[in-house]
Length: 205
Image (cartoon, rainbow, N blue to C red; front, side, top):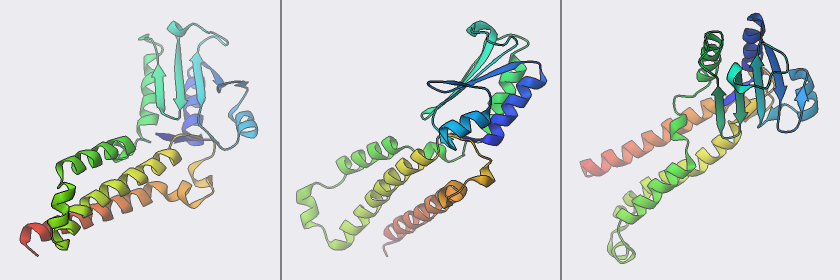
């Protein structure tokens, strides 16, 4: 999941509106503001921690909300206290709206395992030598699809993780602005082509 400056600002505003303090830090330093973090670390970072507590400087985990944003995902930790649960829920909702409905399809390891299983279940080398070219093409088409999805999902995950310390409309770069739409178009196109191949095969064309 990738989140943006708008989301971070909203989380901080929610906490401050309820009288809570927010400590901003990364792997090495603590910052006074998001602006300071952005000036020192750039517009895209892979690690950000937000500690939300009623008393400034509090380090007791049983009385604060911890939001850890890392390259492999986002973790929200909070004790079940009446004053913390509403904030925890609002933060959870903010992050949930950035979860793409197709993100579960963007797993390089998943596509890699499916490719291996497909190869294992497919015709062996000696069988391939005896198959007509049309049959080989039909067998290769899904394999090519699986390999393309594995490569594409790898690059998708590399680009869509961490925190952009800019508002989404401020992001410079074609992929940064349109990456999710491109992913949907490519995925839809590949599935359409694969469906046509399977349909032609079943109909004997």
